[in-house]
Amino acid sequence: MSVRDVTLSEIQRLEALAGDAEARFVMDEDAFRSFYDRTARSLWGYLARLTGDRALADDLVQETFYRFLRAASPYENEAHRRNALFRIATNLARDAHRRRRLRPLAPLPDTEIPAPDRGAARVEHATDLSRAMRGLKMRDRAMLWLAYGEGSSHQEIAEAMGLSAGSVKLLLYRARRRLAAILTSTSSVAPRPATGGDR
Image (cartoon, rainbow, N blue to C red; front, side):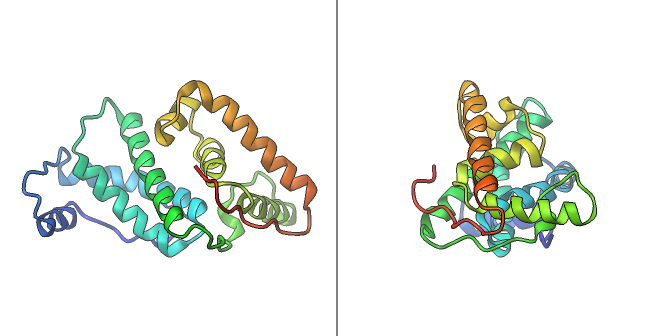
């Protein structure tokens, strides 16, 4: 991962350049650094998987933390704070996708897809899964990554993606079925990336 560290002072400098003197930051430097250290790596993995672009994921991580701090929202607990961060990231990834609507996803190293297998079987499984994920719409990729890559609960997925908690179970089930269909129908041929219609 190549996420560049960002500090609260950099965020404040960006804010000053933007001329927004009224923005308030509710986290001090130590609290922000700790939160960043706990979340930046998984956030980058999520964004890289959604966008298929490592450089864009780097940029979106920085923008996500910037917007998170700028919002200066009170959070009930760590989970609520993390869900808010991933929701910002999801929205930024969607915006980036709309700007690049028909550009195909670039392949990411297969080792970034978690797989329980070992050795050659693990590599083969990861390769198939990576190809299949590229054939899904962005919402499906996001839900599957949050559920299985991040271990998020249905409630956390709903908060991160701006969905109703009741719809997540069904949407996740459908995303799993679409992924399974791609995996079973194309074992040696990579599917074409999804275009248009992402939500």
